[in-house]
Amino acid sequence: MVKRTFFPLVILFWVIMNVLLWRSEMSSHRNSGSRVPIATVWERILTAPDDSALQILHRGQKIGFCRWVAAIDETAMARTEAEQEAVEGRVRAFAGYTIDLDGNLLLDESPKRLRFALHAAFGVDQAWQKFRLRLNLKPNAWEIEADADAERLVLRTGEPGSEWEQAVAFADLARPETLMAQLGLPPAIAGLAAVTRDLKAPDAAVLARGLVWEARSDWFALGHSRVRAYRIEARLLDTHRASVVVSRVGEILRVELPDDIVLVNEAIAAL
Image (cartoon, rainbow, N blue to C red):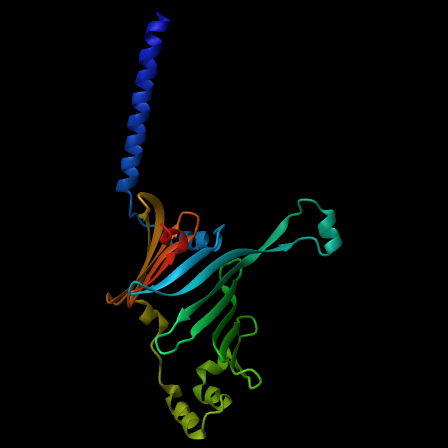
């Protein structure tokens, strides 16, 4: 009797499991596009285990390349190198995050490539601490460096041997006449800036009202198959749109910007 009922029970179990798997798959398709907190996706990007190598395309033509590297900044609890070697499997303290973006870009008006390198450091609370952007178009180079703790912005430019550097306090950014005088602009222009100092700039909150950020769970075509991903979209006044497709582990797969500028992960471009 047991032998007679065993085989039908196995068949019944197999049918039930397939039905449940089918319902789960269909449910996930129906839930495609459900909203996800921006903070959740940003956390995945900052803690992604792999770098993102991206091709830069403009209207379908490759014009450059960049590499996005996000990392967790850790500091060893042991104070000396000897202590670090002595403590096997030592615990490391979480200090924050870092982002590095470097690459090159072909400009229409120049036969040379513009090379860029960006480094940003964030604290544990994901608030930025340091920022450095360097642009190089031989023989010229430009660099902007900011420090949140020092509340200072440093500008550097010039050719090798004739570099120019200027440090600006964050407080001076609200006093354009002081800033322009520091930059060596004529007194007449600095005086004009003093006149405009009392004019109120639009509130950032007001400007942000036209910028809508949204993150959703989505599907992304990868070769002949589809994989689950996150899609972040930003719209400005319903006229400009930017979107970023991120894998479930935080790797950047595709970026779409205005003027038909697209960044595509090299692994996907190879397919």
